[in-house]
Image (tube, rainbow, N blue to C red; front, side, top):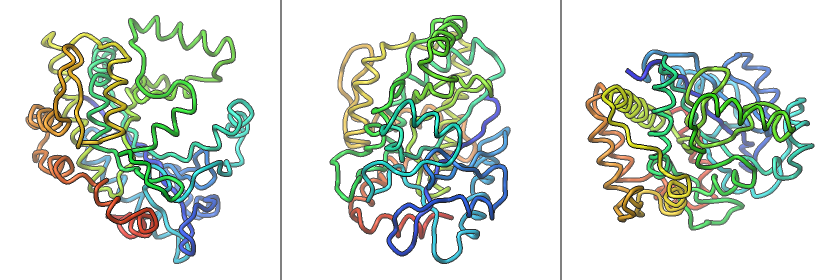
Amino acid sequence: MAGTIGLEEELLLVDRMDWLPTASKDVLDAVDDPRIKAELPACQIEIATSVHKDPSGAVEELRRCRALLAKTCGSDRAVIAAPVHPLVDGPVELSATARAGGLDGRYREIIERQLVSSLQIHLAFGDADCTLAVYHALRNILPELAALAGTAPFVGGRDTGLCSVRPVIGGQLPRQGVPPIIASWEQYADDLAWAVRGGAVTDPSEWWWELRPHVRFGTLELRVLDVPATTERAGAIVRFVYALATRLTDRYHLGELPVPAPSWRIAENRWAALRDGVHGELLDLRTGAARSTRRRLHDLVDAAELYAPGGLDDVRVLIDDPPVDHLRALGSRRVVPWLAEVFSG
């Protein structure tokens, strides 16, 4: 098994009058639950689950936290799971915290533009060498996972033509996107120490890569996924990622994991994934041969299904009927009311 799993989910609080973001502090005070807390933007809320031995328990806890939030909002506000607010483009108010103030001073307006939300999956393996090997294997398939979860075509009321504009917004900050190869844990520690010593970062949390070893939790944190609109969709993706990680763990013990690919090759596929989602093509990391992203994902699902009790048919549905197509059919003005309606689903 991959080991334990925990989830973090970033959400937005909106006003039902105009569907624009609104400050979340009083809602958080009313909820009064340590698993539900403020994020960097004043309108953003984070759910952090407990540690679970299987993905179904983590997803069920996520569902209960969503329901609690929705109940607390009352009739004038709503919580939505939106990777990017479809109607907003520009700086937003930050939370009144020391961390937010420090980041604002160092990253200026760019940090105020980070109204982006993801589903973050923490995976623990209980073995340092296995963790590093699976890190590199997951790193190779970040584009496939991004294509599966991509659901952010709109920003500022316009269609960007992308499957997800979230990485473009996030990429205005440093240390984003495809993470580097880590030759050893000693190298990783040296790199972090170098960045902190010189003041480039204040702590390891500012390594905002789409996959990173989490120093405090001892996990691999997958950060490439756009936050799904519903917990049903989140559950499908979480079980898929857990099954993939379990399979990669088995392959590690058999000595069958591939060597780490160059970052720029993965980044090239990453661009295709954020542009086209499942409708595009990805290049073989070794040969450069182009292949349908949809076919690539189906192959990954087929390989991981043995490790997923109950199967992965719900993931196949997301591949064959990608949610981003439904969002485009709604249009930017109708997306937020729809997200509010399905939030607890």
